[in-house]
Length: 265
Image (cartoon, rainbow, N blue to C red; front, side):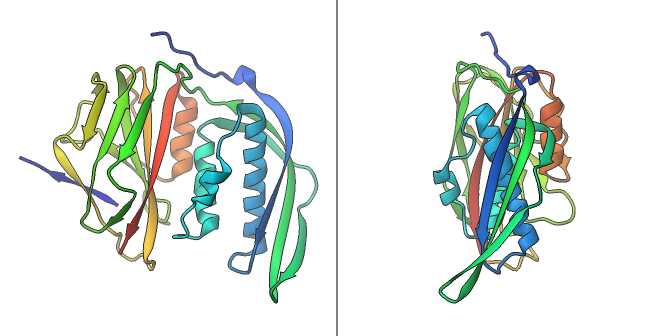
């Protein structure tokens, strides 16, 4: 979690007309740390990712998946990566082509489970800004934090835009998972005219380990949304699906980036 501490050109969009129906298979291997039903859910997620890649190009690289933190387990990290892929493409129709194929094997006296699912999906690109002249990049001061550490970020822009930053806490089961970090009551102006800014500008972002979490470390995410027009985002969302739903409904495109970081006790 992050506490905010007070201190004294021409735009191109992707449209649903580019929707395409494709088939794809996803396979997931796991041990007994998760259930077979959960393994099949992850296999289905992989199938959806492959369907998106057929229409939109590569969404999540194998290298990125390999970097998935072991903090919440690889399955949770991969699930989070899947959520972010949904910002790029909306699945308007999905059908499983037959029942899941479940098999088992043995490795070093341990039972290994496999689940493979084939789907047919209609993939519609979300309305993202594709103009390379409308872009931004983000650099965090660290990727690993302890409670009490200060988080800062440098953001470079190719042109003026409205910027909104959300913090996603995927481990929260009740209450809100998504909180608006910027703009806030101390940093109200989110129309960025400079080519580079450092945040926070009039506050401190202090990282702290959440209470009642029985883990040594957790992963959190920052979601960066840049737009040509000022969008009336909510201050809080129950979960990532709610944010994605509003993202999809935006009539004009939005540029999205995200950063993952880890907090240690």
